[in-house]
Each structure stands twice: as C-alpha cells, then as structure tokens.
Amino acid sequence: MIVLAVGWTVLHRPHLREVTGHGRTIGVLAGALVGANALYVLGLALSATAIARHAIAGGELSFWRRIRRFGDLRRWTDDLIARAVDDRWFRVGFAVNWVGALLAALVPPVAVITLLPVRNWSLLAVAALDVAGTMVLRMPVRARIRRLEATRRSAA
Image (cartoon, rainbow, N blue to C red; front, side, top):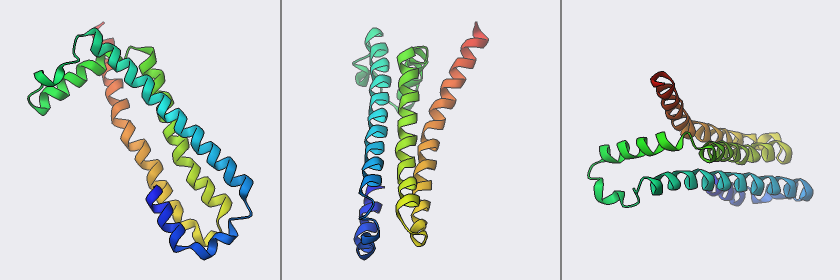
C-alpha cells in the first residue's frame, strides 16, 4: 500500500497543490492511521503472548527439533491454537488486531474521498483490495477457532 501511495505521489506531483490546503484533515487522518496501527500491534502482542504462555506451559519451546514435516508443524500449531482459543487474552488480542487492521485499511479510502478530486478516486480500488485482503487473511483463522469451539462443545 505504501509503495503504491508513494508511486502515485511521484506520478501526480503537480496535483498535490490541491491537497496542501487540507493540513488539519491530513493530520487527523495520520493520527487515525497511527492509532489503528497501534491497535494492530497491541492485538498482535496480546495474541502472541497468550500463545507463548501456552507453549511455555506445555514445554514446547524447542519444537523445531520435533518438527520434521509441514504436517507436524500444522498438527503442533492446531494443538497450540486449540489450547490458546480458551485464553481470554488470545481472544481479546485477535479482536483488537482485527479492528486495528480494518481501521488502518479504512483510513486511505477516507483520505481519498475527503482530499482528492473525483478524477483520482480510482485509488479506491487499491484501498478496496487492502480491506478485502485484511478480511480474507483473518477469516480462515476465525473459522478454525469456530471449528475448535464447536468440537469442544460437541465433546462436552
């Protein structure tokens, strides 16, 4: 996204005069982007901490020696995530990370709509791809969490 934004800026440099009068709006959008990325990183840290706690509790920090094939890695991560799913910090971290990622992905389209003339709104296609990518990348993880929860409920 950053590479595309820099490339667009270089190619459309003469049109930047239209944006320079919107300093306050740019500041608000920049603050929103910083805040969204802070949520993203905080959520990642919470989830990683929860998973690490379960790995330490299971004595699995030296897992590289035991994993010989991709299937072993998948089985190990499935087991570790199955234990972490019940952890409140993992759930909170995953949700905070998702919200942060979505907010960060939504700031550029808001910037395009509020700052740029209609002829430059084609940039919304790039922003839409970013939002879609954010959703698509997290949906399999959420689906796996739901399957694990359903399996546990049916076993209980």
